[in-house]
Each structure stands twice: as structure tokens, then as C-alpha cells.
Amino acid sequence: MIKCLYYPVDHDAQEMDPARISDVLQDPNGVVWLDICDPSDEEIEMLREEFGFHELAIEDVKTRDQRPRATEYGDYVFIVAHEIQPAEDPDDISAECVRRASEIHSFVGPAFCVTVHDNESEAIRTMRKRWDANRELRRQGPFALLYLMLDTIVDQYYPTLDAFDDRLDLLEHLVIKPVDREVSVLGKDEEDDPHARPLEQVLSLRRSLLNMRRSVAPLRDGVNVLLRRIESIEETGGPKAGRARALYSYYQDVYDHLIRVVETLDTYRDLLAGTLDAHLAVASNRLNEIVKVLTSVSIILMTWGTITSLYGMNFQFMPELHWKYGYAYALGLMIVLSIVEWVYFRRRKWL
Image (cartoon, rainbow, N blue to C red; front, side, top):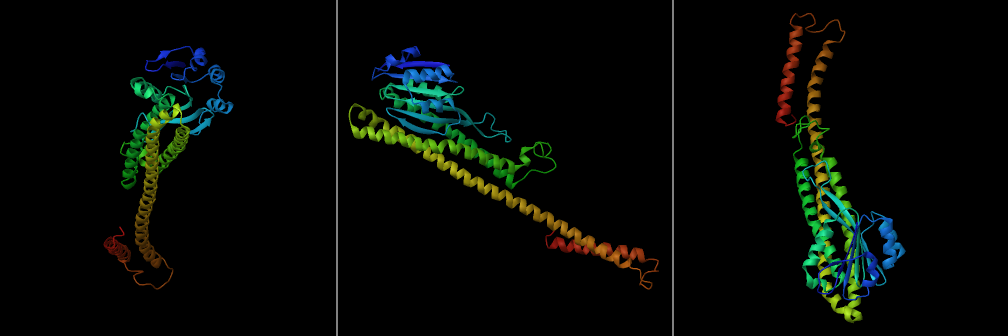
């Protein structure tokens, strides 16, 4: 699906035929916004013909799972960004708590902004609402539109961080107070209950953290590329210097937010490492408790084995061998010694 909008100076959007893009681009004050969802081969070919984009950039648009970045191609910039949102059902601990919604590829030049993405994008819808409502920002040109897109994507990262925080708190609770191994909190067997497998959930959350960091950290470097481009435009002076000077603080704000998101992800990763260490420590303590119980029981049984093996020796002359109370005496001796050992182990807190 393709949508082409033209924004004259101080006027509302006008829908136009994409075939007229090359004619409208001659207006240095207007902005052409071309949005393509799930592009076909014909629509990608149209980008090459109407805008003359670099072959490497066109190849990147055809390929999904690109690394977020900003690349300069002469008078335009190619940007890749990933839209990440919380999972639809955050209470489902067996599923990942976040999901990657859309991968947005953008071309931004002197009078145009082209966005190409897979699936419907919430960031694109929000960006258009903000762009239509802010006429002052529209005067700053297409790089102001790019700012709105990046700012909207980064704003979506904060609910995602909250989802990570909630899942981390839940995992810490499960690690410190593991559910009963026979009957879980959901009344299911351990194999069917993810609450009974905290290690699996910790490793899954760590994988999600790493995946999100791979999407956020490179985007931070990409915004830094845009900041350097704005600085170079300011240094050259001319009519574009005023726009660049006005946009610098906006992009600096996005850059600061990205730094905060990356630092928060690193903090969560450290907390998750501590949670994993706590899980291993709890498992080790549980093993120690089991070993103590088994050792105590084996010592009690060893006492029985010592007495029975003593009376099982094949000597002709043995005390109590022909005594009619010998069996009761041996059995009573085993019971008394077992009770004494049990009391001793309880006082030492081995049982």
C-alpha cells in the first residue's frame, strides 16, 4: 500500500499521484511524504526512477532485519529503525515480554521524506498526527518529519522498558520463592508450568534484552550521524543553516533519550545477571539441604546395617545367640540408637 502526501508551506496536506513526485520536488519549500507499507517490486522500482536512490540503499530496502543506522548519500540520508513494543499479553510468562513491530526504512532529502516499512506501523500513524498538528515544525522541512518519526519510536521504548522491569521483578520473586515442585501455583504439573522453570525464563529475558539492545544502541550512533550532519550544515551557512540550528536541539533530545534507554538496558542486564546468580545459589542451597537429609538418613540406616551384620557373623559362640529375647533386644537397640541419632541431627539442624 502506498500513500503520497504533499505539504505546501503553511498549508494542509494534499494527496497526489506518486507519478508527479519528480515535478513537485522542484519546490524547495514544500515537503513530499511518500509512505509505502509492504512494498512490491514495482513500488521499489518507482523509488529508483523518481528519486534516483543509490543502488545499495535500494538493496537494503528489499532486505529485512537490517541493522539500525544512518547512512549519508550526497544530499539525502538513509535511516533504518526498529519499532519495539510490549507484548500483547504481558502476563504470559512463557512468551517474550516485548516484540518487534515494524522495521522502518527512511530516505530524507532536501524536499522529501520516504518511509518504507513492513506491516502497519503505529509509529507512522502517530508521526502523521503530530506532523499535521504542528505547523511550526512543518516549516523546518523534511528533517523535522524525520525527527518526529525517531522521537515517536524512542517514546515507544519506555513502555517496553516497563515491561522488562515488571518481568524482572516477577523472575526475582520466582527465584527467591520457587513454586512447589509437585503442584505449581497454577495447579499444573511442573513440565506445563513456566513458573516452575525460572532458569528458562531468565535466559529468555536475557535474550530479549540483548535483541532490544541490538536495535537501540546502533540507532543511537545513527542519530549521532544526523547531529554531525546538522553541525556541518550550520558551519557552511546559507539558507539551510537556520533550519539546521532549529532542529539540532530536537535531535539532541532524541540522542539523550536513546542514551538513557541503552543505560537502562545495561542496568537490567546486570540485574538479570544477579538474578541468575541468585537462582544458582538457591539451587545450590536446596541441593545442600537434600544432601544433609540424605546423609543423616544414610547414617541412621548404617547403624541398623552395623547391628544386623554383627549378628549375621557365623561364629559358634556369640552372646545372646541362643537368648530367646535376642531378636527383640537387637530390634530395640536399633530403634533406640536411631532415635538418639535423630535427636542429635535435629539439634545440629541437619534435619
